[in-house]
Image (cartoon, rainbow, N blue to C red; front, side, top):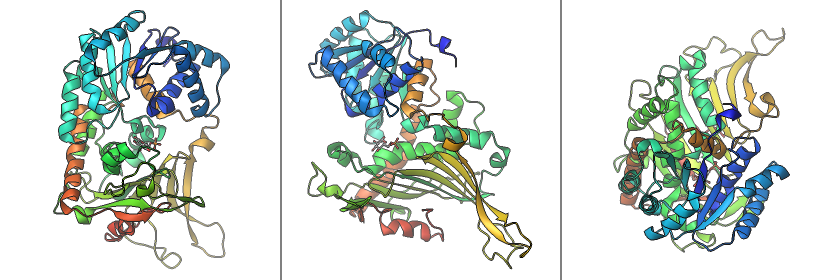
Length: 489
Ligand code: BG6
């Protein structure tokens, strides 16, 4: 894409502009786009929030935030240009009549607008009604919705219905920021641009797949929100299922949004339901207790700031997921994600099948199977574990397990790994929905997740405790060990 393609100005209207997501991710992402010349010179950023705030204070706040969150440091010229784009609009989101003030503010700018809902989803409907009442929803506008869309299938339908009353589906961009990550996108390239993998990507060659998304952070001061959601709704229903669907989907006919989203949807729909009958055998939920991380003591979930004395909310989930279709029958996908694990570490490990017969048994009794590791973060890269002969004549067949290692930082020297939000913002400007989640996908994912949550509630068992700084409850080791396999550490 050439810079000259960004000729039309878009106004970014961020609802909840003073919130955590906007300050940490959205504004820094827009700054980076500005820095590389991908924001039109006339594009404005309209920050909308409840508080009364003079523009000078907003500017000071945004500058401070950018200083904190733009890792590469700020460029003076870009910063001045970026700050001059800011406009502030105070708004009570639930007051329909108040949206006329916003309309007045927007009247001075361009008509191509991106409304970014970075607020609790319960008010997405109110904001859509307000924008409609003020005549702000035209064919030239797009709306971006942050996850989680709802708390369950039912509540997500209500929210989607409220928004769809005013916006057409091709104007709605449901964000899952994992779809903007470099390595997650690379899954498409690895799978469909390499015949070696394309031709071995099924039950005939693959034994099982592990997906680990581990975070060392706790709930970062978000106890209220998190306690209502838990790791299942916060991470599995969206991020982990998006990764799983890209790994499992059939080859799309092309890269269009329709083709990709249709194939991902089929994969999620083919997930075997987990319910009361099998939830104990197929899932583990955990909650972190007091522990140590990098040598320092950290509080358990129930001792975090703002915590209630009792809560059964899970901060860790492990699941044996299965997909009932021709490609994947009998190939488990083991998912694991948690807070306060030893490190921020996300990876996919594809375990290929073992060789049927070992002709090297004199020197290597247990020939290990090949493993493809896709490191999502940090230290993005791809690694293929292979057997190799150690050079030398002393022993004719001395074997060694080694790896072909494509580390992004070594291979693409000086190439900055762009943040997921930068890419996704740009895709919204470009009007490309392929990296956004369709309504059908959101609903299929909720349907699968709801059944697990409902089964957990029915069994009424508290989550298993694990010390902060560990890899989760012991029973998550048992979950995979029952199948004679183990987690890759
Ligand atoms: C968010 C979750 O969607 O993703 C957070 O709400 C989580 O709880 C975050 O920490 C993880 O994102 P990333 O990009 O840091 O892996």
